[in-house]
Length: 477
Image (tube, rainbow, N blue to C red; front, side, top):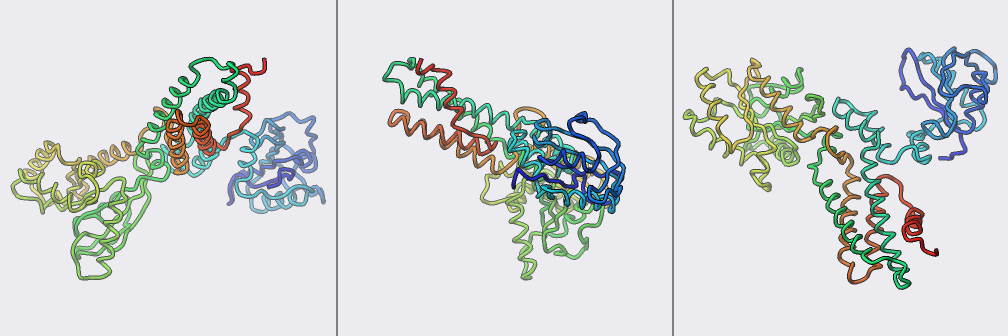
């Protein structure tokens, strides 16, 4: 990217529409304003829409009549002089305006993300806000929108900025102690204060990391897997949830042999729902591969919908909890603690329409008292009975996995944030390790922790450390 260039792009998306927005940013924006809209930027009121004829600067041909807005830098999205042309959204109009812009000297089409990149370089956004903007553009559900808006507003970046400021102060104090303690310019107890600050900050970062990946789940979608033995009604459940025939339903066991995926909005939360092959021993090579993939998905799932044919439950309902617990042991990941796995499971007892009312009432009573089991829903995919209760239970589980993005501290949303924060914690551990052995190496730990935080927001510099050294200790006075 060359910041001396002026860039332009269609910002409102492609396709026929009523109004299209063409954005221009860079030093030649004033030239665009005068040559295509007949306005002198020095006499144009900023951020005020003007209805103007938009013409080709070479041929003076009228291209369209639309609204023109002038945003002088640094008070613009990119921090540069900018112009917006709000024109009619016909293909010919858009093409004519873009071609005319491309013929102006020093003006070129923008690369992908270049407007936002210039905003970052101008200090208008940090990297977390840039990522929040990208998430907002791609948000498909209500709760994703809320999380993206909070991140774009700078809540996450502000948290990391505050941590960085505290680390900068710690590093400044340690380096000042190393350089000037012999001159008795540093007051007693400075290192003890640093020790306390580093320990407190390390604890805060570790708590931030222990978020159960809520923000990442909300951003990418909760992985929900429908699993169970053959002919339990897994594909029927998928079709009911999607309200369309996504998967083939057949009384023949083993119809589903591969993973069938679809995306859903469950109460505003994004869900990636996967239907899997029925679990059983089979001589069929293709079906065995389907079973292997099913077990693999269950191991990776955030939530497993364990589907079972309710007519296969023990006739003596007192034995149902033990039967279901044994069934879940074979279904859920073997390498995981059962209690932990059960917290990420929802029991779905299908085909309740084949039971009598007395049997249904007895089962519901037994299940409501079985504290050792995960939440259980008795339903019928064929009649729809019990689906409302199931949807409420499913939404509750999904919400608990994602949390409320508007309450409490902002959540991690990116894997790269987590990686840098883990490096930050490791570096702070280096400070404690070398504190009494080699203060220079201890200071390096704080510096590495600061760098890790700076890589998240994209902002880190040595000048801030020098400013605090001279401000707090008045060295050279």
